[in-house]
Figure 1: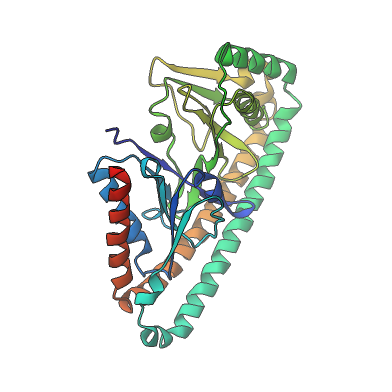
Figure 2 (figure 1 turned 120 degrees about the horizontal axis):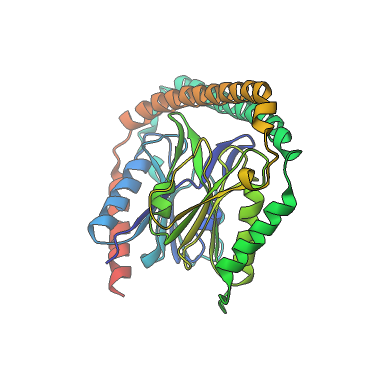
Length: 361
């Protein structure tokens, strides 16, 4: 059996605040476990244990990574079992799912022990919210600077050439290809800002692609627009589309994957720049195709200044995320010391039995 694992972020610490696309990744599930509980009550441990169990029995697993803690999982999806297990910290709407089970791991917490630490918990929670908000403000500043970066190149582009190249690519990809079904649509993040910096799983997500298109260019040159047009054609022809949004600007698209066609297309520029490694890898350089020659040189000083300001804002945001992580860790210690983890252990037995039952049917 295929033991393939997919890794991605369904949430993002963005210039628009905490943005979540978890809802779009639970479509098609029959069973959904939603876990609630304070930090340190065993949510991450439970999700990781179920994840490892699935791998041990040969099931494919999709791992949703946490943007709060690099070492944590926010949830897992098990497509073959049509089952999901998600931390309900970010509320989702489990529409059209037959069986939704809520697990509250706070039930294993000795409340008298926690009450003695109430002031500390309240302090850590307030500081954590403050640091997250400061991080989002810094990322908002970074996006504003990025807009200035884009403005330099927007005026230098011949978008008619970009549109022509996009249409040619679409004709090449979808010639004589169509399905009779409705498309499934998934929204995720290409990468995410975390307390450890920017992280992405491009290599994992695209490793099965028979062709990967590395889209190069400058800010504002039309990379996201090209991706949207390809995706729109795929949807019109009934193919499933995975949209991967920009970790800074969730309104922008940085990658799409058409798994039924074995194709992936992604913005291969910093901070997620990759280089061709296989014969099937192809580079599309939009700036070289349609940009005015000499623009980099003409605005070299302005671009360098913008790049420095952008990097400064990103670093500031990441530093605030690191402070938020420290507050969360302190809170974890309090709840962990007050928890028996009894409900987490029971939940593990229930969920693994459920998965095993679904495998046998």
